[in-house]
Amino acid sequence: MQIRIEETVKLLAIDRDDNMNYPPLSEARDALNVQWYRSAMEPHRFRELSKRSNLQGWIQAGGHLALFMSTGTSVYFAYAAEAWLLFVLATFCHGTISSFFRGTAPHELGHGTVFETKWLNKLFLYLFSLLSWWNPFDYASSHTYHHRYTLHPEGDRENLLPLHPKIGKTFLLQLFTINLFTLPGRTFGKGGLVSTLWVTVLDAVGKTGSNDIPSNEWLNALHEDQPDQHKKSIRWSRIQLAFHTFIILISIVSGLWVLPLIFTFCSFIANWLSYFVALPQHCGLQENVSDFRKSTRSLKLPKFVEFLYWHMNWHIEHHMYAGVPCYNLRKLHLELKDDMPTPRTLFGAWQEMLDTWQRQQTDANYQYNTPLPSTARTERKRRSDVLESSIGDLAPDGLA
Image (tube, rainbow, N blue to C red):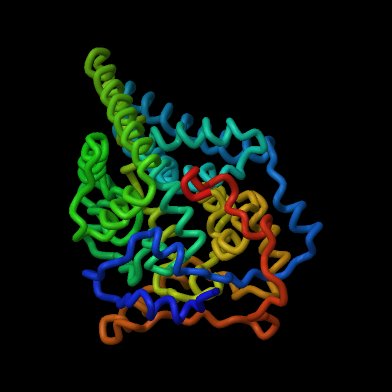
C-alpha cells in the first residue's frame, strides 16, 4: 500500500532538531514512496534529449581538463620565472577552474550520462575525483538517495536543511585564497584542506568522525546501508593518499615545490565561484514535498560559468529528468519553460537565500515557497516510466 508523503513524515516522527535520530535507510526505503511530479513533454523529444554523445562529452570533460592543464602550466612557468604577481594571478585562476573538479565534474560523470561510451565516464570520473580528493563511491550512494528522496531527510541528508548561506569575513577570505579550515557541516563533503586530509585518513582505516556533525552522520548511515560500497570507499581513500603522497615526494626530490600546488592542493584554492553557484541548488527551499520546482532552483549564468559548472545551474531540470546529459539541460529547460518557475539570477538567488535565512532565525519552520507561472501544472495524469525516472548509471549495485 502506498503511503502519502505527509503520513510518512508523521510515521517516522522526524522533526527539525539537529539531534534527531533517523531510522536506518533500509526502513526509510520501505516507508517512503515519493511520486515525483515531472513536467510533461513529447516522448520522441525526450528520447532525443536523453541521447549521450562522445563528442559532447569530450567537449565538456576534455575542455575542462584542458583548462586545468593550461592554468596549471601558467602557474608552473610563472613560478619558474619568479614572476610572483603573475604567479598569484595564475594560481587564483587555476584554483577557480580546479574547484569545479570537487563535486561538480564527478557529479555528472557519476550519473554516467556525459559519454556514450561507458568506460570514458568512469575514466574521467576517477581522474577528476583523484585530483580533487572526492570520494566517488560514497557519493554514488549518497546521490542515489538524494535523487530518489530529494530533501526528505529520512531518506536524503546530502543537503540537510536549513542551510546557512555564509558570507562572513573569515569564510570569504578562505574562499578567495586557500580553503584551509572550513569544516564539514550539513552538506555532503569533507570541508577545507585540513578536514579533508583528516576525513580521508579516517576513511582509509574504515572510520568516520562523530555523528554530531550531520555530514558524518549521513556517511555512517550510508556505510551501514551499503557495506560493499564502503569497502570500495576505503580502498579509494588509500589510493588518494598514496597518489598525493607520491606527488609531494616527487616535488621534494626534484625541488619543484610548485607541483603539489598544481595537483594536490588546487581544488582548495579560490573556491569562491564554485561556492556561490552551487549553494543555491536547494538552500532555503521546501523539504518533504514531491515537486522539484519547490525544492530546487535553476539559475541563469554566463555560458562560460555554466560550462565550468557542467550546466548544473539548470538544476530543477536535472532533478526532474536526471538521465538527460548535462549539455542538453538548457534545451530541456526550453521544452519545459511554461511549466517551470522563472530561473533566478545568481544575485537574486542569493538575496532570496539570505532573506530566507534571516526569517528562519525567528521562525525555524519557514521555507521559501517558489511561485509557479500561471501556465504551470501541479498534477500529472500518468506515472513516470522507467526512462523518465532514470538517474543514469549512478546507483551502486546495492541500490540498483
